Length: 100
Image (cartoon, rainbow, N blue to C red; front, top):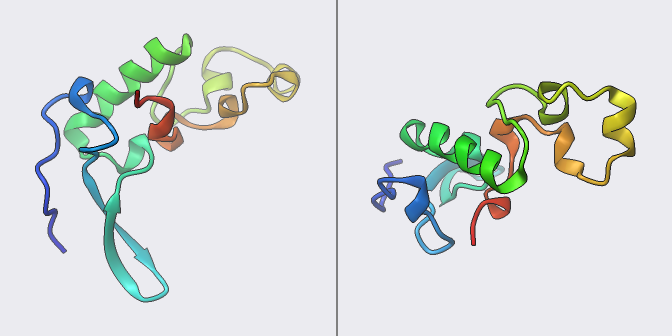
């Protein structure tokens, strides 16, 4: 399948109306839907999205490392923290956290 929309040129122009399409797979095969996580964005936007996540969340975010671990938190500290996204890797962060 091909992407039918032009992705935004920068993550700053990303909003709920122009999220790039992602080729997902389900019970009935491949289908296109808006990207839902940083890892589903086109390669050209992933680093920008990770930097935006750092600004919005106020912590360091690495694409493939759990956020709490990357910020030198212990498993006990992560478990007791109310920010559930601390257990997520940067690539798994929902775009909903970043979009205004």
